[in-house]
Image (tube, rainbow, N blue to C red; front, top):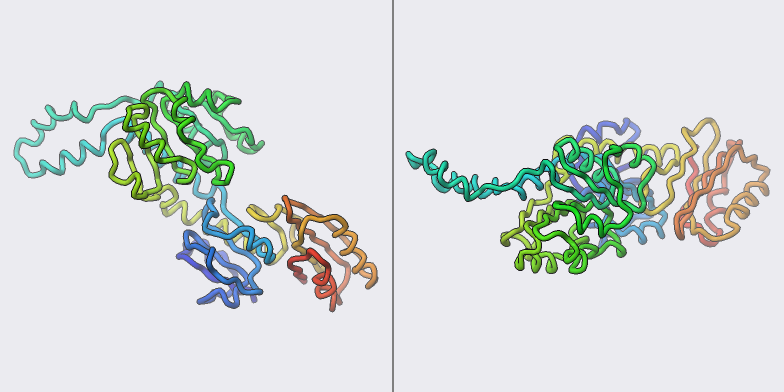
Length: 387
């Protein structure tokens, strides 16, 4: 029986994927896995039994990845599961920035009940006029699951699309329309595009990447959109650019005191993935990742350990080992098995930075003591036998 705990409300359509061999827990004290959305885990104490954390979403800044890795806890996310919901809101953000739709709506609300509201609206509407996005240039920085969808959708709306991603994956490349102009220098997007949307992960390398220098290279009157992470943009530099007229609008999905209610800023209350479909997709994907790891040992979409897949476990016992990525680990593992006359049916090892993962299928029924022997090896973080 596996046990799981939800730190946030998780869509029932996802939880329903758990079979009867899984049991929900009120706390994480005895949990094998935790599902989380936005709850911060940085100050939490993790029980020794915890093996996996699945974030029902893409961003994982609410999870202490290094601390989890050192405790042998695999952290998963759900890339692409909420991509369509975010894509649609990015398109909406461009439209809101192009035409003063919200200003017009608020004017009508303020004059509701007036008998001549229709006549007055015809005279007033010029105050809310704007431009169309067809024929304009959109720059997409980051062509992952969301960025690729945004780029393709913008093409269908008649925009000219520039894309920048030095780490473009093969899968993303296949999903992109051939009509998207793939640029090798982000400065080309800054200088050429009327709208710029950023879709890159938050890291020390990307923190504040849209700052004063980037803004100064942008076209006068450009619109900047941020539906990825708030820390990607130096918002004080953006506020200065709005004040001096360098930027026309800043559209962000991350409210804070610096931007909320300020002129030229359209702040949305973090609604990017807040659709019924996105929440269901994320929950389903997170549950499937947990099940695959607990039942077969396979790691898919981890953010702190390497992805590793040996398929569905057969009749053999499967030994899974999370460890530091240092020399001679495989030799030590196989030596222990050889010393017990255990035959290795299959073995795979993957590494990611300072961490590695080894899976070994063994032709044996009695593995008593093997787990404890492997745990004694220096730099081993967690051992699990699935049988």
